[in-house]
Image (cartoon, one colour):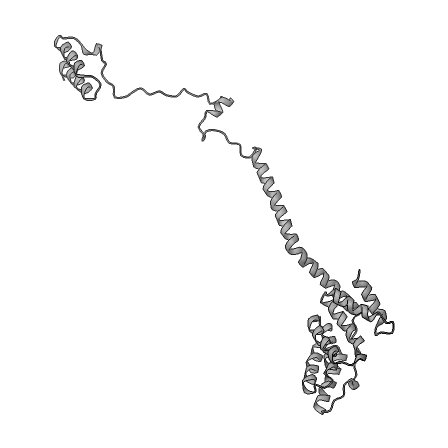
Length: 264
């Protein structure tokens, strides 16, 4: 391309890009006609524009100012040695431990207390329990088959086969309801021996409701044992207090000692 044509293209490009006005185009055109160079006023545009580059950083500079002006991803983060992280961890650990302890006390302490109480109650029953004496003559029976069932129950009771005793006495009770308080009494005693206090209390209560008064002291002694076994101390204490009111009552010495132990 000839210099004149190149200079005309330069003027046209400047005008089309809005870099010069019509008056400036006219002025540059007149310069070309006079043979003057237009580059004294304007330099040809370059394809690459200069950019303001940031000042080079001294990578060995570790001053606070340098650190604050680094991009966030270049700033050094010391997560292991910061003060906040251990404090937050210790705070969380402290209150988590407190919460665990609180729930342990609220939820498990009553259970543990109940278990310990049951163990103490069972140990007291084991210490003071003795099966009441029974004989074949303890019950008047009119039918031979019922008499055989009674004798079978007595044999199991004496040999301390209490589950079999309960089954046999229930059959006797169903076949001859008269004097069933005797059956209920020995069923209740057998249930204590089996560790089933609630069933014992039910049958001993039925026995006392139907039994003559001369049976009441024996029944109340075993009722008290059943309540101790069930961890019902107040009910047991009331029965034992009534029994110790008279030194001639059944099992007076044992009654007094048991009352002292459960009152501690």
